[in-house]
Image (cartoon, rainbow, N blue to C red; front, side, top):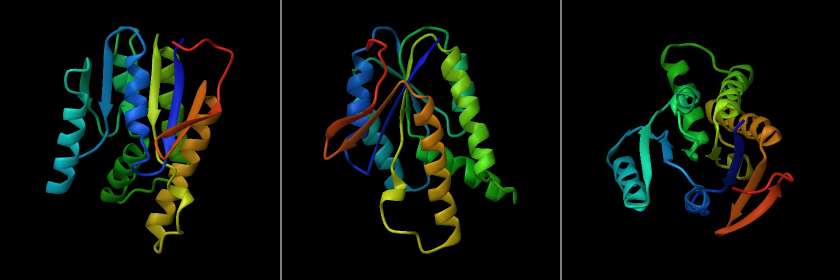
Amino acid sequence: MGSLIIVTGGARSGKSAYALQRGEQIAGTRHFLATCPVTDAEMSLRIDRHRRERQGRGWRSIEEETDIAGRITAIEDHGPVLVDCLTLWLNNLLYRAESRRESFDEKDAAGECQRLLLAVAGHRGTVICVTNEVGMGIVPDNPLARHYRDLVGCCNRLLAAAADEVVLVSCGIPLFLKSTDRQRD
C-alpha cells in the first residue's frame, strides 16, 4: 500500500524544491509527473527551468495534464512518484470541461481526487503531491476564478485528510501539519 505526502504553500514558497529533496531521500526509481501545459512562451521557459532543476538528479519525467491517477497506476516499481502540481491538474480538468461546455464542480473534483487516492493506495511506494494554497489570498474578481479557488480548496482538503503527511512550506521552511506514526522512507 502506498503512502501519500501533500506539500502545500504559496507561489514560489519552496514547495517544489522541498518535494524534490524529499523524494530524493527515498530509494527506487524516481518518477516526476509534470501537469503543466505549455500555454505560451513564458510558461515554456518556466517548464524548461524546472526540467533543468531536475537534470542529473535521477528523475524520470512524465508529462500528464489530466490522467495522473492512470499514470501512477501504470508505474510498476516502488520508487517515489512526485506530482507537480495538483493546482495545474485541476486547472487542466476545469479547462477541458469548460472547452467542451461541460460543468466541473466540487463533486467532479472529489471524484478525481478519489481516483487519485485509489492509484496512490495501489502504488507500492510513496507519492508526493505538490499543491498551492490559492485560497489564502484575495477573493478573485470573477466567478470562474472563484470556482477554481473553491475546487482547489476542496481537493486539498480531501487529499490532506487521506494523506500520511501534510507539509506546508512557507518562506522555504517546511512546517509539518500532519504526520502519522509510520516511519519516514
